Image (cartoon, rainbow, N blue to C red; front, side):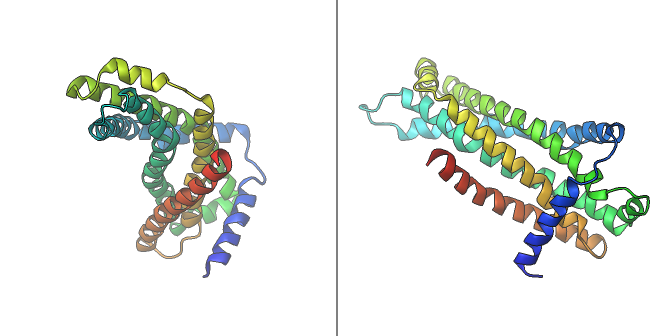
Length: 246
């Protein structure tokens, strides 16, 4: 099957996702379950990676800013810019694509090969709406909060790195993270996060929903879902940056 056919099936799937919604009582139960599975269970890895990558960024900046004519507050300034503009929204989304994307593709793919999706269709339930829409809504609401947390912890990690290594003064770092702060950059990061969250759900859902075969094919579909989700995130990152910051 060529790429154009895949793209067409993907958009036809999206049309079906938003068609004939389920009752609110059913949707609410699925929504809170997805908040836990796709959001809360990803909290630990986001906290861990954000803190230490922020620390690494600050240390690398401190080691490279060795010119006495360059003010030391540049370390905090560059760390804040790197974390807010690129690290938190893009790098964290790629991490989530690996963790959450593989889970979505494998869970829906398993339902497909075990004929659970066929059973839903026989009962007159819109299976795509039932399985995918709660995931989309939950990630669109929860992932911006995760990214804001990643921004905070990344900058905090850089601050703690300065305290522990004595490579720069904490006063300079604090001044740098406040220097010429532009709130639009946070808005830009949130916009990217919303787009990436939609991709993180829908592409793995597509690979899982249309899988054919058995457990081996489900594993392959899960791998393909992670790869293609990451590729699309990187491509969209370029175009969104060009549109919003260019």
